[in-house]
Length: 263
Length: 305
Image (cartoon, rainbow over all chains, first blue to last red; front, top):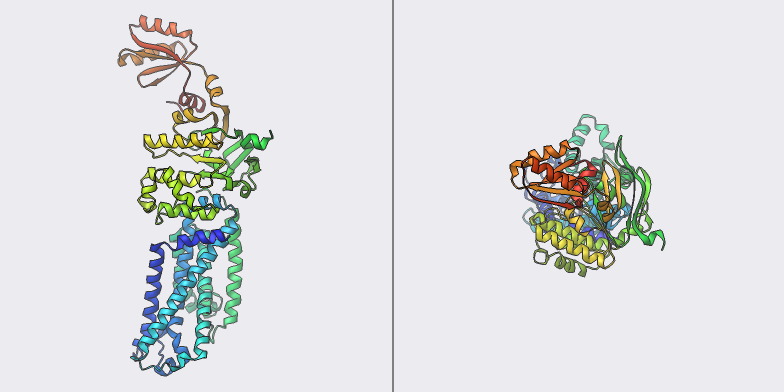
């Protein structure tokens, strides 16, 4: 399987994808982190859903990762798009037949692809985190935020925990994208369905019937990145995400293994 | 010699149904090891379906087959020794030709040094660094052939390898196929250019509407056909008149490049010559020839002009 991972990484590191992802992730990370610090005195708020986070809160250990946590859900969407397109393009380009002639074990192809994309997602998360922290330090003085607490072991622990949670969240979104790619076999359809579902349909559903939010995949994937919240526990999201991904992943894998490659 | 060593491919009652339609129905044939075997049939006759079954890409609905002595139920046992290009070259457009080959070399566990050797072999060394999407059809086809050669295959399966190639490209591919066969590689090649297949293939498998209608030596097929009398009137205006005379006499006629190809025994030549003379038609030439593979193909598949 290691050969599949190496081959897949060669595809993932092509300049158009790599630079495009770095630019997108860097742009999002810079935007969200800058908003937190540059709009600290704005009446419209400087956090999600118009919330306001002041210098006192940002001066605590949490201030180090505040911007990074905000960008987490968008990293998930980027991950969904990459996993979906990388999987579905094998069908749309007709390259799946080449892969299967060189590696007939379909499960190895699937697992190798997933591992390679995990590595890619990890690099993406680490880059976004590093950039967010650098921008946080750069803008803290201007926003009158004291960074003393950012150097403590509590801040380092929070940083590790947030990075891990955001990485798990991006993997959940990515796996969702990969499953869509396998089912729909078209990058455009897989991305469109994934993005529409997570960014629009889930929000409409949870706004109309608030109790559904607890059971919707995208909301739970995002909650993983945030490390849980008072309305939705981290444990609930872990269990639900695992359940969704195991069941849908198994169905998609069975389909991938048995379906004829006729294009 | 056991069956496995004798035949690179065997198929027995191999069948693939898509709903009510049989893409291949009870196909049985054998491809001798070390031979160049042509795989011919009109579009939609089941060639690509058969090739996909042999490569483990689609599951047969019935029957069985072996490749290099192993059942097609276990493609992992024989695919490391098989090179294939199926239904045209498919690669990643944003990667260069070289990177595309490296992806496949890494996947198959072949040395990366082989990539440059093969680019050289298919005359793409200069353009190996260019993105695949910038390649012409002929270059894409050559890259597909290079990819098929990556494993240094015991069996090479090529589906329409000369599509999009210019005459010199076709000649190069013919050279590559012959060279591989001389080194003991079995080549199973489908093509629409039947004159090409006739030149290089010792064996043929012919399909029509999902059924194998011939499997055996090319020479056996051609010599079993009735010889053709080829008559060429001096003036083209006489073609229709002569055709009518001959068909009235009960013989089948095909018109190819201003000549009448008449399926009839050699002794009919005199009769044709006499009929033409009586009708006031001068024949520029009249000769006897075995039918070409193309003529035989049209005759057998009913796909003639």
